[in-house]
Amino acid sequence: MATIEHWIGGEFTAGSGNRTGPVFNPATGRQQHDVVLATSADVEAAVGAARAAFESWGQASLSRRTKVMFNFRELVNARVKELAEIISDEHGKVLSDAAGEVQRGLEVIEFACGIPQLLKGEYSDQASTGVDVFSFREPLGVCVGITPFNFPAMVPMWMYPVAIACGNTFVLKPSERDPSASNYVAGLLKEAGLPDGVFNVVHGDKSAVDALLHHPDVAAVSFVGSTPIARYIYEQGNAHGKRVQALGGAKNHAIILPDADLEFAAGHLAAAAFGSAGERCMAISAAVAVGGAGDALVDLVNRKAGEVVVGNGRDAASEMGPVVTAAAKQRIEGLIDSGEREGAKVTVDGRGLTVPGFEDGFFVGPTVIDQVEPSMEVYREEIFGPVLSVVRTDTVDAAIELINSNPYGNGTAIFTSSGEAARRFQRGVKVGMIGINVPVPVPMAYYSFGGWKDSLFGDKHVHGPEGVSFYTRAKVVTSRWPHVSHAYDASLQFPTA
Ligand code: NAD
Image (tube, rainbow, N blue to C red; front, side, top):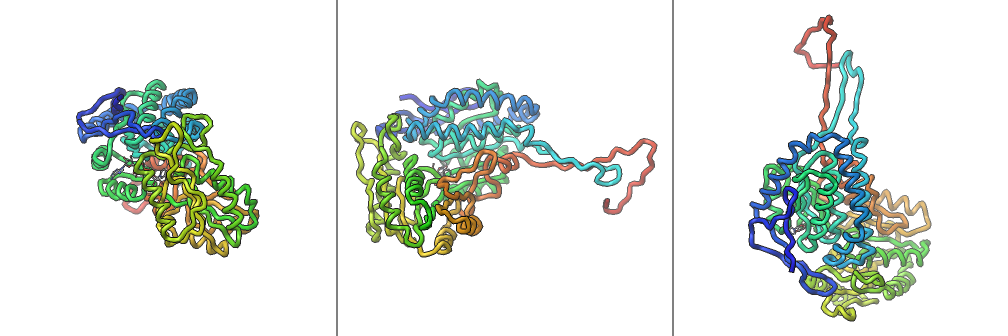
């Protein structure tokens, strides 16, 4: 069994500790690797390498940084298949979905290739007589990314391409459940010409995270994961003087009006609920049928759920793979049980599913639960599995109210043919990312991604303009170059124009 090591200063190292964690293949249910878990000395080594590399990378020209990003873009583009296989084997998602995740990550790399344009400053000529004012942005130093299991390539790519293109150096602490994709891209970055130490990977759990949060040389922390940990990262990072953006969990609602094309809506709902086995922070987990759309919608969604081909992610025929761990399977099935106990109706049941040839895999089939009430545990909890709950309301306003009373505010969608209803929805919901007849409204790389309320702690969303702003800080220069023959008096008065 291969041991997955850290990547520090441009090379692999087993680090100084003796703790390891298991990495499973979720389709077979068998452990395939060990991953080393970092000690604080390993974190010290990674941050030290990043700090040393910042001395020169922080001064590298825009054209040099751009060139590395362009090279990296070409390498990732050429290796989508290899990366997708690595992701599928450790996460479980099907190959096409894994390739899609790499594609969305590539878009952020492409955005980062435009860094000279993105870092242009402002200039005001003759702001006062003989005085010009201009601004420019500088990198922060060592930036850290702490990422979840569900997008082992894409979520880190939301962070390090922008951070590095801005002139920072980076330490990535990926999920210990599927760590290999991060090591693979580390090799590609080196091949792209990135100097050693600019990008480092430390594997680990809470102790590695805490050592990063407490390290005085870490300037900024980007986190994506569950809400309790996001809140912890935000509070600890702030307490230790770091800039923090911490994206948390989600409970994404789609509302379906009776005027929607229900066949279209049901197809998209099923895709958004069951794609990647529901392990997407933008998955739709609650369908809110408004004003009598419910029964017809449930019939259609049941049919779509029943048609999903569940199997090994490596099998091209599979549309949905297993969930990530045995514990996740148990938790998801327990939440379906709780819905049933509390009076909801399980109309498609994915519990106890076995896939021939993969009897020990962590599979849960697509599940639809109708007649769900907001008080039920199955509604309140983020399930993070292939489970769609159907709730009913009488009006659009009641549906908006339901969404707004939820603690999360990551994504939401409306299915309707009414522009008026869509506009009322887009203005009324307290949610960061909104889809209109689009169930998974993940913004393009040149916009910024992030939710509201318990789905994001901090001010800045990731990638796009807010990502550039997060990984840099501004200087404003007020300059005067008096003519040598020009007499002027310095005055104690407050300077005014
Ligand atoms: P998680 O919170 O368990 O883990 C995320 C990261 O935090 C991992 O690197 C993990 O090692 C680390 N971590 C875990 N426990 C920790 C602790 N006690 N102290 C310090 N660090 C700790 O999340 P996960 O299960 O890997 O991912 C699923 C969650 O991520 C879901 O809640 C999902 O909604 C969320 N997510 C959110 C977004 C978003 O954009 N808002 C995107 C993807 C995933």
